[in-house]
Length: 100
Image 1 (spheres, rainbow, N blue to C red):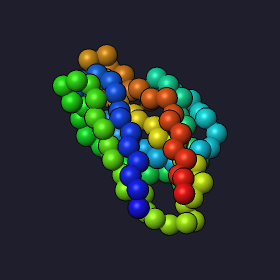
Image 2 (tube, rainbow, N blue to C red):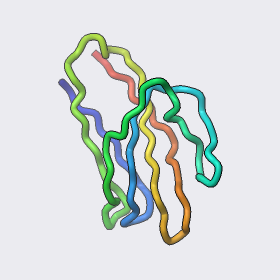
Image 3 (tube, helix red, strand yellow):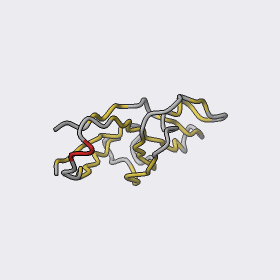
Image 4 (spheres, rainbow, N blue to C red):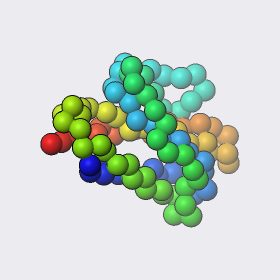
């Protein structure tokens, strides 16, 4: 297989979740900053943790060497809790297109 990487950026020390999904309709969530892109039929939390002192964390996933995945389109999206600001923030969606 190959690897796919995503870097989550935000407030240093903020807890985060990183999701991966087949794209679906974009929605808003009451009380949350940003738009929710993880609304498709297939969704998964692929990583969680705390952002480093530089406000970043890079996540690496192994993509199976499966021909059925060739050309598949997903989106990454992170959610963070900014405790100092008292809010939940969704990142922009970042496309992940699996090549061959």
